[in-house]
Length: 187
Image (cartoon, rainbow, N blue to C red; front, side):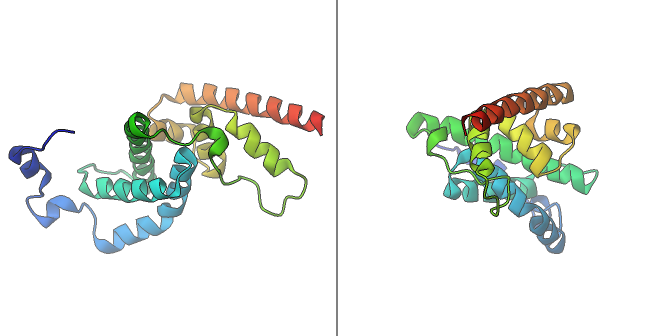
């Protein structure tokens, strides 16, 4: 890690309070209350680490507040948050991979998409099937079905093209269905 020069540090310092916050306290609080939980769950599912998810959540909101981005709508701001979070996960993975790799898929404990009341074992099967998908496929499925995001929103959140999302979701659903059928036939 290199030292930061004084000129770089000065660029990081805000000139006035207005330069830092692009929204007032109440607007931010309302946004946070609507988006923090789903964003944290997304970060947790990506990292498998609650402490890292907490840190990345905080950094995501900090970067949103420091950005000078204008947002056309609430949905655009929400997509921007998920995009920041996705980039932070990629950065954390690259940084930690060099020092301490993120937990292997088998070591991660992911929250289930199914309710706790499910007694049939399909919750466990779904978790196992999802763990066999690529990270991109899991992210796309999570954003589409747990978050209810459209293909365009998923593309914006993950930094991909809409046509790619369609293909990723198609392949993820097909692979998950195949894995679930296979797990069901063994029962």
